[in-house]
Image (tube, rainbow, N blue to C red; front, side, top):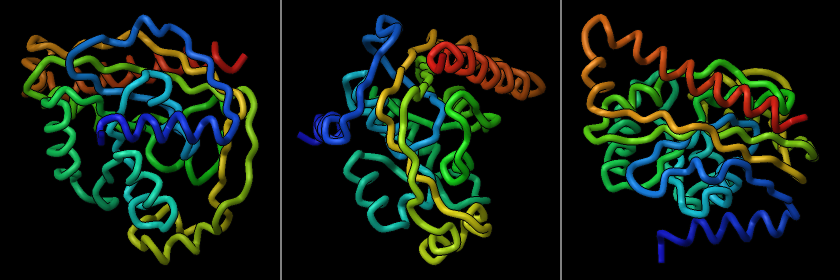
Length: 239
């Protein structure tokens, strides 16, 4: 029952908001095995949009503050998300939990841009620089897996002001993003293209490179590949 619940919640949520979702390159979604979904990130709707697109639950790593703020906390918990550690931490708990989920062949989702595009509105066709944590996670996993890059391209949306950023610091004082003026935007997709990229397969050969002087280079290569792939798909989907 639990495994299907986040998917049903996602589908029901998109139906309630009237969001029209258009899926492209569905055939690129791996049919079996461990999958790490990597996507751009501008809205709290991104997790349910991605779940509805692939047609199965995805265990998303959510930003730490989402596990602290009422309403957001309840929403991400029901979706089966698990929070990152506090900013400045080494994310050991995240790596351990994500690795266990991948070993159980559950889909895991990561938003490598971090929280910045969530709290400061950016254009739908732009991305922030990717953090490299997802590449380290993939290379540390003991089994073969696929990194699946996905672009969420909003073509029609509404934007409202949800909360003053400084108010959110009361719930999560560890978050430096809240120490600035302005409001947390609330982006609601009306029409959105979801474009599936070409999977990046992480095998024993790639994992063997993840040591010594080669490690930094292979991490950078995987990170850049996924950011480039998503960037190209995003450009296609937004125009």
